[in-house]
Length: 80
Image 1: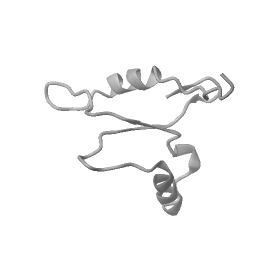
Image 2: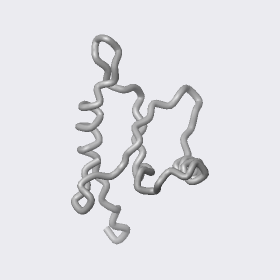
Image 3: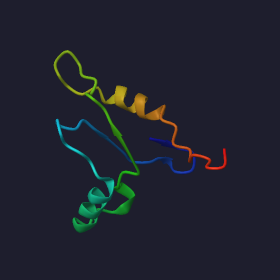
């Protein structure tokens, strides 16, 4: 996803199976175990009911990028 300082940050886009849940902390532990560089760890996770697909069934990655680019990632101002 776009970032002013770094130009982009990693964002994981997921579609969960029925009854499944996702824990970002658990993913980060798993990535650390596998010795994946922190630079590649997702900082954001976006869960979708389904991915946009082409008529042949391939995921429209450009459409996902466009959706992720519109997400407001600014911290919530607790004083407001």
